[in-house]
Length: 326
Length: 287
Image (cartoon, rainbow over the protein chains, first blue to last red):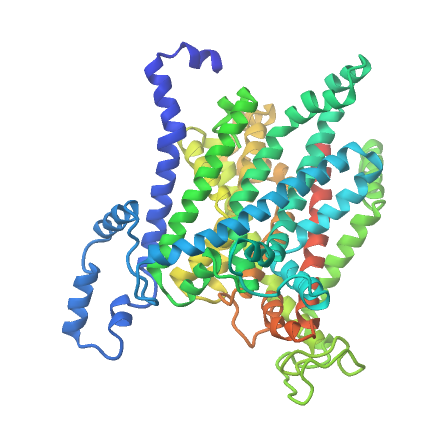
């Protein structure tokens, strides 16, 4: 397959590359955002009625619908929304009566900080515990049981257990709120980040452990050991590199899923971020906000997935031909 | 029945039965799972009180002979609410898994059978769906169709199709190229019979294991939707909702409701994952 690709003319190869790294992801974003747009425009509750309030007359309603563009076809409305979004204009929030973009900005910073902290915990502890479980044989069973329980702990249960122990009983961390200033914020976001990280760290740990175990038992590793190559350099150059693909894939997918987990954790801790904002906007039927956040999430998922694919190909060129295989 | 089988098959069956029951972790996990199902089905007979029975004189009461696990903020018996709450907490993800597994397997087997453009488009859609967190899909479904049980269950069913579908497709593809399939085609067996009766039947052990693991994940997602206040509405008892419901009591020093409800969720998911993983390992080995 690689040979066949090399035999192709350069233009066609560029087309394949662009298709994979540019048009494919772009198409995914467009299709997903269109599906979400159509689904939400059919949602219960007429925005014109909500904006006018009370019992508006039929004429006022028609005028308001026209002002909002609700009387035009869905394709026109989607195009308008999309071009607006491309310029950073996501319309107005029905609840706050201000620009959605302005509402999102401070919350994105909060959620980004939370997911970065959780991501760091996941990568360090997940991969760390996986390595310990694979390399130190006696710890293997302990690590396996720990990760199987960890995977099963939902973020919202972890959140309340941590609050109960570390905020209420020990008083080390605040139980609620997002904090002001960087240091205070990090202090406030520690428990949320831990509860967000537990499940994913356990998952990454499990995958790391089994991937490393499979490589440690492989023949080329055994023979490298037999030839007296130092254990550390065998581990680094043969085991870790070969086991990297599944570990990176799972870590990357976990990082993308963190944004989804943030929905739960932010609500549990009363943090005003993107996730809790999505939930309150869904409850308040504030669809411009919901649309803006979903577009943001779709873009994040697609970008992270594409990056994970790219890293895997850099690590293992064989993955280049496996794009259509699961 | 067994006596009519040849000696070798009989020995293999007996060996399999013996190894299956030699794994204590699997036995404990399976017993926990069965126990939970029995508990929620028999809730009307086992529960000491009606789940909606309030008692304002005893809010957040500690465990006692009358209330074995104490009461919640409205004085409702926690043990009874946990028993009744498990009904929805287990039924909803069960529905999700049944729908997702059926649709996912059907799509996977037909994609593997027909191949070509159909196969590549099914695979692509499943890959996109797989990268999209199921919880977000459920939240958006609530935004589009209103809160309640139906929208999250349907959204999660769609979201979980690739969990089963991706694995099933790659196995069905391998199965499709085996000589026995060609033999069946040459023998004139109808396509649907080969797909449903032979290929799917051979995939069943893997599908079963995958479905059990998806069940735990769906249970957590469904609980999260309730926890966020977008799914089941009070006063209905449901584990995820009870975790959220107990928050204010937890902040004022009585964490029992949140912790017990959370404990039930974790216990169920651990038990299901253990059984699912062992079944998956077994299916892998017999291949």
